[in-house]
Image (cartoon, rainbow, N blue to C red; front, side, top):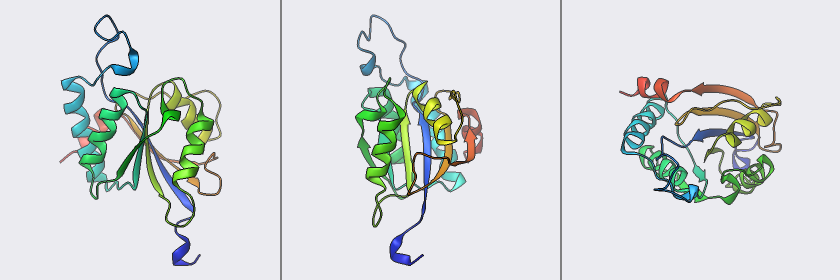
Length: 177
């Protein structure tokens, strides 16, 4: 591989949004529910754990929902160097994995494309995406604020990939210095 060609694999970091306000009369539109103060604080500590693990991202793709965007912003601000952030409609709740995979392919195109991408979204969609990327059926359960890394071939971002790690939010906070 020539140096100009870039890496042949993609590191995908699937991130479920942090703890958000409950559904109900205060938020009749589910897309507008923000993170709670506790959710913000816990996820900041989780991002510190990611930083201590040496995680670096080229970009963060996020659902347009408020709670996911807020989680993505905390992730972006907390890592060095700071990755670029893009809102991607394919990561909205209820969307199918194919749209997410197409967005990953677009942002990781050969040449100067990103090779370390976080995808911030919702359950059960992230769990279904993780299973698809790993060549499994069903879904993998993500707690709020959980992160997993799956490496896939740049030429085949739909998988099958390799699960490098899966960390709960409590484990990430425990890694924080």
